[in-house]
Length: 301
Image (cartoon, rainbow, N blue to C red; front, side, top):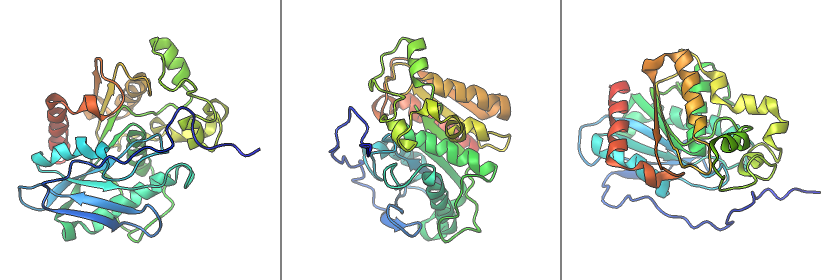
């Protein structure tokens, strides 16, 4: 029997909501960063300031099943433009298009492209950060961590001699321990929004080829960014909402603890937001924007 690879409890026809890009005079769309489908990116420069601009490459979420570049999920990153940061929004393959971890190679190709072509777009090749939300947070952290140990790169793109390293990572409400959802929600006494979390047809099950995460321990370990952490990992800012019903917030807590053990407490920030839910809306406050700007200013200076 062929499994339906659509996760349960989701709308198959999610409408595209564009990012708030009106009033940005310098923007570039559908720039190819590598050959093949879903290998293009968009670039948004600050309205003011002097080139070259430091760069934030934003990785959208969507359970690795939905999403595309320059959607409304880019809005938190676009808030950083006023602080002088250029924003890059790449597309990548979804789980039913290419198997995980193809997406890590794609993001590394995007980083190499941005660094190789930085002068063409007024970008600073030496000041690049990754930012992601939800499944995009997982991809962002895993991309940065695996790069420090030379793993999970299939050599995509035309700039293989260029580094795919980044200087900092901002990750919001990401999943990192894919076989721990049910136990962690039970421990927190939080009822998950998707009640079949951890099953073969959940988002994470589809991500792993239609297998329940508890049945594929080796693949789960290989997908956990903590597995790749070394002292070379770039500084990390983790945020999560304590009312999150999609990803248990303790996943960010546990990753922060693992990172601090390896990288040192000075390199890792954790912000658990009381009452915040899953999604960008609760993470666009002035305080959180200021925290992100201060973090980037510190590590991309």
